[in-house]
Amino acid sequence: MNYKTYLKLVIISVWLSVSLLSCNLKKNESAKNDSAIDSSKKLEWFQEAKFGLFIHWGLYSVPAGEWNGRKNYGEWIQYSANIPGEEYEKLAKQFNPVRFIAKEWVSMAKQAGMKYIVITAKHHEGFCMFDSKLTNYNIVDATPYGKDPMKALAEECRKQGLKLCFYYSVKDWHHPQFPVKYTYHTKQYPEGFHGFPNRDADYKKYFAYLEGQVKELLTNYGDIGIIWWDWSGPAFDPDELQNREMALALVDSIHKWQPKCLINNRMGGIGADYGTPEQEIPGGSQSTAFEVCMTLNGSWGYNKTDTTFKSADEVISNLVDIASKGGNYLLNVGPTSEGVMPEKAQAILKKVGNWLSVNGEAIYGTTSGGPSVRWNNSISGITAKPNTLYLHLFRWPGDNMLYLNDFVNEFNNAYLLADKEKKPLKVDVHSQGLMIYLPEQPIDSIDNIIVIKYKGPYKQFRI
Ligand code: GLC
Image 1 (cartoon, protein in one colour):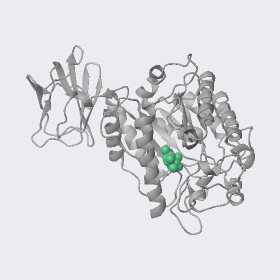
Image 2: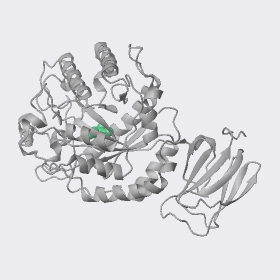
Image 3: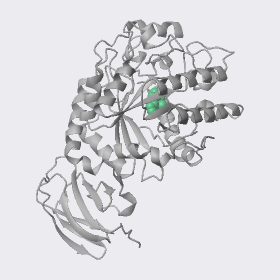
């Protein structure tokens, strides 16, 4: 990615996380339909799940990051390389994911310990990765592949017990009725960018198309966990209050089509059940539900030269950090246009899955233990369940002793989660804390988790 693109993405990311996580959820406008299921009920599975796979897959996977000799593009390639609509459309003829096997993708996610998949049904390029009757610019009608991978994924997710969720970009560089003014205005494109710019574009007409497609996605693929909007722009247009009205009405329809389906906060926060900080982890625990989305390497869409993969340890450390603040981790992998998940990504996810198969109890279904106990240098994060705290140690204390501050509960026992025998650790109970004596050697090479059991409802230490 070149410097300018990088800078742009950083600005966008910061804008998204700051404006969307904090303010939109606070002023979250609920839709008119009172029969909508309460957010907290709908969020139950999500907050249990904690870890999901994000998949960016579209026509941009064909050039795999390269255009005219430059190799640092991603899913924004049409925009960044300024590719006109007619030329970009030709990529569809080359999109033939003959090696795509839904079972392998879902198994990969499942073995990684992920509980849900969010996949790009349509990214900003406007190409539909599902069988849409509302345009021919879709994988069934426009590619040699001619099949609907979302159908296969939906079936496989059902079989393997994962939730399938759809990312849907509000912004569309292909649909002639999507107004250019609602795309980014940058130095490169002071008026915005579109593959088929149209002065007479009518957002109302585009929105009817969007609504129709969301209906397809929510009525043709069984239960869908989340409708994952991207790009709120139009909903904020101060001159077009009807944009907001239309979004509110759509939220009502979504609640009708799939009452349990969650909605993220990227349609101007309208109908939002949770926030979506991007590429960064909030500084502390949050009062509202959130999901940090992050790339496993440096790109969302497949880039054949991007080798900047995070290590499994880094992924685990992020997962713990996010869970200890009460959030979910949505980790992205970009598959090739042939339908293959990069081997490197598979290997990392496998390692993460191995760690979770031993330590998952301290992640799934937990809440933040953050505000309840003050930080101790050796403790990187604390997750919690009723009568239980999980202390995450990425560094083993040199003296094999750990002091847990501000613990004023009736202590029951403590042990290392990875210890099959749950051998009790020696603990001295002090009036405002616990001195925990650890074995000389850690038993996990990444994160050693100390389980603290206590009796009664959690008592918060007050200074
Ligand atoms: C940013 C990127 C977009 C990506 C999204 C995922 O908005 O611009 O391409 O899909 O992040 O959150």
